[in-house]
Length: 220
Image (cartoon, rainbow, N blue to C red):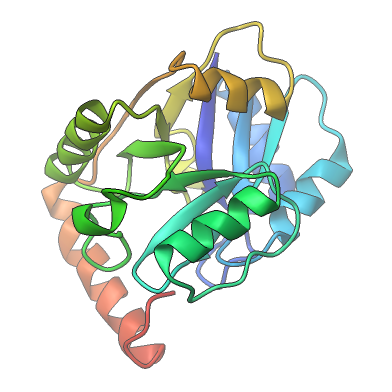
């Protein structure tokens, strides 16, 4: 069963996806669920849970901005404090009962970088992100292999057209968010999907630089 374990909603400042559209479109594409998350906010995840979708697993999540890059807090519904050290952020996620994933670790603007992943108690590595280029995803996959870490994958979608372009395959017997987390923990997942192409990189970099300057040169 495919799940898109990195999907933003309109509750992210740069997101355009409505929660109901995420669920509908991914179901139409044959997906069995998604990690619905936003930047430093649980609001999209809470909205999705309140819809009680049928035959669709909602993994409530947040993309937390640590001091050095983004960390996915899977299976949480309460805010996680932003701008903390990496270890502090992981500790807060674990204290909330969540699952800490190093998001797109080799992305220049918002990835942690290898040095901030090594030696930290991450529960998994995001080995595939469809907004990252092929080289970055390859390095993330190698990092996970070298660490013996479980893997996740997702589209990092911010608009409807990219939903499902990245994914995690979990066992078909998963029926709840807890089942998904257990499957990841037990290394019972595979990842795949598209990569950011060279033609998309120019627009992506331009957008990233503009937003970065608008934030006062701070990470989202």
